[in-house]
Every structure is written in C-alpha cells, then in structure tokens.
Picture 1 (spheres, rainbow, N blue to C red):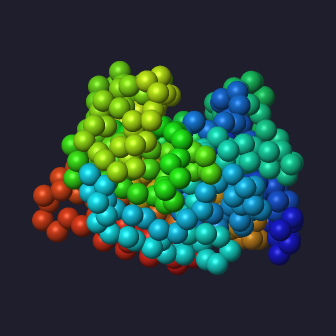
Picture 2 (cartoon, helix red, strand yellow):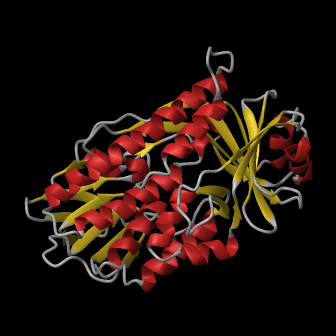
Length: 383
C-alpha cells in the first residue's frame, strides 16, 4: 500500500481528531499521508509542548520514523543507548543497555525538548494537508451508524467517518462517549526542569536511596538536559509551572554526582514544573460506534518507564494503519483493541508496580531494575 493513499474500499476517508498533543499530532500526520482528510481541533491557541524535556524510547522513535518525521526530531534531540542507576551520592549501581525497541532504523533512546517535538508534528501536519483549527474543540457527538456528526465549539458541524479523542487524561470525548474511567493519583509528585547539560552526561541516569523517592535526568540536546525529582504529593497549590528554581534546589538536597551539580547550577528563578502523577485505564473497548479514545485519553501511566509518548504514538500509527486497511470500521476498531490493549495494559500495570516499589522500597521482592528491563525487552515485539 502506498504511503500516500488509503486502501481501495476504505470506509474511513474523513476523520476528526480532537486534541493536538503527541497522540493527535502523530495520528493526524499518519492518516493524512495515507490519503485521509483530517480535521484536527485543539482547544489551545497554539500547538506547543510543555517546556520541559521528554525521554523517547525506541518504539516511540519507530512511530515517528514510520510517519516520516523522525529525521527532523533527531536533528535537535540527543540519542543514547543505556540507562545508568546510581546511589544518591552518585556511585554506579548498574548499567542497563536499552533494548532495540524500535529496530535498527532508530537509536534505542533519545532525549528531546517537548516543544521541539510538538513543533515538528505541527509543521508536518500542516504540510500533509491537515485542517488544523486552534481554539476549538468538540461539544457534541452524534453517531448515526454509518457516520458521525460532531458539533464544534465555534458552532459549526463536521460529518466524518471516524472521531478520535486524543484529548488527554481528562478527556472530554471519553465522557461524551459514556465511557466511565476515574483518574487516580499514584501518590507521587514530579518536579521537572530544563538545565544546561554537563559535558559528562551522556545518557539517562536515575538516583536511588536518597531523601526523596528518586532523582534523575536525561540529556535532551547538545546543550540541555531535563532533570526531575520524584517525591510525595505536595499540596495542590504547588501544581503548575513557575520560577521555582530555589524551591527545587531546596527540595533536591541530599543527592550528589551529576544530579547535584545540575541542581546547584539552577538559577533561583529557573522555570520549574510540578505535577501530581496520575493514572487512568479504560477497559477494553475504548470505542463506541465510530468514535474512539486513544493515548492518554484511554491509558495514562506513570512516567517511570518512559513509555507514555511511546504508547501514545504506537496507538496513533496502529489506528491509522487499521482504519485505512479496507476493513469495516467496527472490525478495524476491534482489531485495534486486540493489538493494543494487552501491550498497553502490561506497560500500565508494570509502571504502577514500579511506582509502588519506589514509594515502598522495603516491599518483599521489590526490584525496580528487573521490572524496567523486563518491560523494555517485551516491547521489542512489534506494536
């Protein structure tokens, strides 16, 4: 099948994608390059990413490669092939080679600036002919069996063959479809900051055994790194982004090595993001009729195995493949669930187990390195 044409007889020729994050961006590009008319609506007024960094595992990079955007992301990102575990004072515990989850065409892992990834996906969506509408979302969904009529917040309607909710963990589409799923706090909060990258930082590293749950970083460009600190949930007044470098330096005391140097290098007014880590899991199926929720709208997991962007991107590529394959829509969506749900559930369950072990390290049998390694090796199987 040509990259630029959908399969003859495809029932999906026009799609409404709700949400312009990584999931919606990858899906829109993937569909448009298969000859599908795509309308992408995004409530924000620009398609930007939150300012901190992101760790992209090989399976996320493979999804970017499959839709033709990998090279542009790689131009600014920082590739590497291992994860290093350290004690709080900086001594090496273990070196874990990252398995080739994306195959030979991409590196095992890449750090990147979220805003760079968002910009590439936005540019490529426009270049592929996606009808991008900012400051707009869906307000009503009317499934008429052989098509969906969606009412948008600007008062217009769109008639489409498929509606996809890619609108995140607090998805409005999920509620409109009558899918009940509660968002749960995991019990951890995460501080994130972008800082100058020390020359001797060449891969992701995680520090265990300190005063908080853990600290770590990922190089995200030749000049920058993304550092994080996980601790208990603080009062919700801390949630958000602001000039809190001094606060992060205070809360990040007790860690040495490169992490301690990065912490100490932060200006007091460095822009820092703090969020509660939350999770949601929609049971199979994620669709009702010709509407479906994917990515974080269906399965948001803690970022402890760095698989959030990968699971979202895989969803997008697989969905685009199946709904343009010539299968009737219902069969295509059922086939999508059969491929995606077991894989996503494995990652989500293992991430939640890892979170429990990191919050309660005295748990009998707790072995964070083992569960991370097992999960990443399992993900070498095709999505």
